[in-house]
Structure formats: C-alpha cells, structure tokens
Image 1 (tube, rainbow, N blue to C red):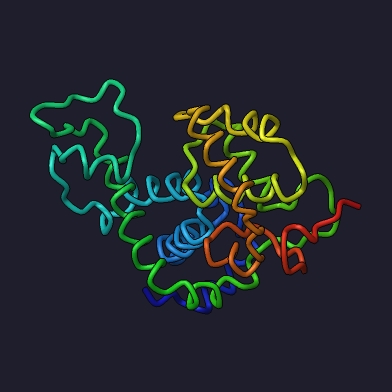
Image 2 (image 1 turned 90 degrees about the horizontal axis):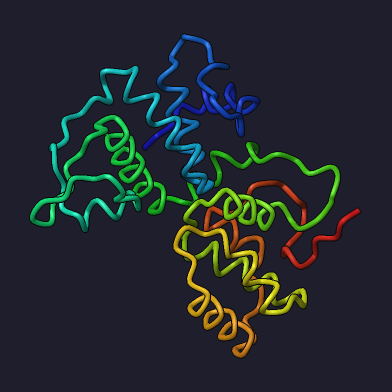
Length: 233
C-alpha cells in the first residue's frame, strides 16, 4: 500500500492518540485514518488499530465490503480469540457483530501487507515514534508489554518472549517473572515456567533495538542500541 507522504507528514503530530478520528480535519479524513491504522498495526498496537478500523468500516462506504454471516472456527481464531456467547454450528462461527469482524478482516489484510514490506513502513514512520526525555522504570517497549498484559490483552508470541528475555537478562527470578504474565487471559503457569526456564538454561541474549523494531514492538525513540542499555534517570 502506497501511503500519501504529504498526509503522513501532516499527521505526524496526531500519532499515538486515542480516538484519533476526533482530531482529524474532514479533508481526506479516511485517507488520514488509514495512515494511523497502518501505523498502529505496524507498531503492533492491535487494540488501538481495532478502534480505528471499526470507525472506518462504520463511517466509510468504501470499507463496507461484503463478508459471510458465518466463518470456519479455524479462520475465526486467526483474527479473534473470544468465543464466549458465539453461536457455533458444525464448526462454523456465526457472526453477530458484522462491523467488528469486518474491522478485523481489514486489519488482517493490512498486517499481511505490512509484514511483507516492513522496511518501507519503517522509513515512512521513522519520525512518528515519541521522543523520550525522562527515563524511568523499564524501557518503553517493555513497559508497553507489561501494560498490555495488565490490561488482560492476549499478547503475541514475540512479546512474551521479549519480556521473558529482558527480565531474565536483568536478573529477575523465574517466580517474579511468572507474576508479570499472570493477568494474561490464557495464562498457564506450567507452560510459562517451562518457557522461562528454557530461556534461562539456553542463555538467550536480549534482542537488539533493531530486532525489536523489526518485530513492531518499538514504541519510542530511546537513542539506545539494546533495551539492556536503558538506564532510569
């Protein structure tokens, strides 16, 4: 997807805002929102991306593409994890919130495009990351993962791995780290302990900031090369 570079530059100051659509001018509003949607998917902020995508599919006829009234459970679980109160017959989930699922399909399509062209999007959004002026606690990428877990979000594999590697590399005990994962919706203490002990036994080194960016987990311009070089001031 080729984004309008002029609009990208114009929207830089609106980056990282909740309910960003309330801050945008009506001129090319949907084109501006797509930029923010792509940015949040690139940054792996799927909760915020879902808010934007839902707004788009509800307000812009161009995004009201047809979808079936049911979808196979395997396909459904690629885009959503909650099956509570869903009608399931013969392996198919019947969709009761069409706009929500249409938004998830839009995000899934864009994520595939972004994953194929991460260098392009890294260049596009290089000035969008918030600058860090005061350092406290953990590095922003780690703080963001902890915040999402505390909000009971079902974070991905690499976020779990990065958090475990970081905490083990700074000397936290397995028991301390397990407590960080406990709020996860699908928390399993036995599996969590196994993976953390594997990281420790194999002496996994912490990913560099470059690798963190490639994974879409970087959330700020920290001016460091590795999260382990972060020092609170």
